[in-house]
Amino acid sequence: MAIIAFIIINLVTFVALALVLRKIIFSSSYDETKRLQQLNVENTKKAHELDEKIEDAEKKYKEKITQAGDEIRQLKEKAREEAQQIREDTLAKTREEKDRLIGQALNAKEKLREEIEGELLEKSIGFARRILEEILGSPYRRLVYDSLIEEIFNDLSQIDQDTFKDIDWTSLVPQVKTSHEMSSVQRERLEQILFEKSGKRIGIVPTIDKTLITGIIVQIGSLMIDGSLAAKFRKTAENIRHGG
Image 1 (cartoon, one colour):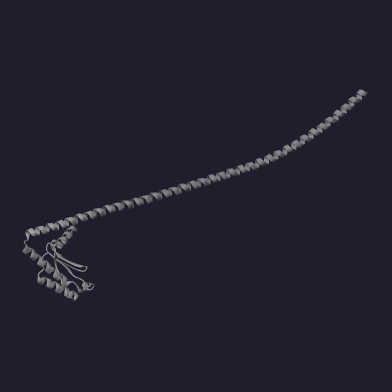
Image 2 (spheres, rainbow, N blue to C red; image 1 turned 45 degrees about the vertical axis):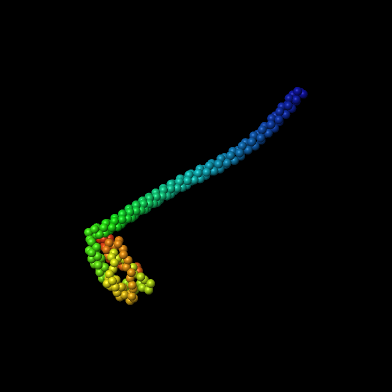
């Protein structure tokens, strides 16, 4: 009987222990399960939030890519326009420089041509003087001189008196150059013409200038009347030069 009682007591104790262990295990498993479920919910929420953040980041990334693409296109277009403007400016400056250089070359050519023509003209005048000296004797050159001086006297007489109104005759001494010595009659006639134009008696002192070939030059202030044969040669040469 004692053994049976002992067995029963042990059985009851075992059952009670099993129930207690079962309760402990169940309670712990429930709490763990609940904790795991909560963790799962939190993880799911975090995953959802992470997905939203990733989606938002991808959206912003795409927007930045699109914006960057637009900016790149704008920069390319601006660079193209600037390059086009630089090319046009460069071409314009090149054309200006070319025109400037061509103008300089033409001016230099024209200046050189004028210098050469001037030298040739002076040489031709000198040559003409030598021809006249060889062909025309002194008496004939004197006749040409007298004819030219008469022409100058007529030109002076016909000049309007208003032409001389701004001339200060007080200290003015007319300069007269001749290829031959003036006769007293010619000098007196020139002084009379100047008296008629100025109202003052002005004495003249002619000087001889053989480069005139033959003829006379009268310089009154800024007014110059060239009645030399050299001047006529020059005028004729200029007319021929310009197709006159």
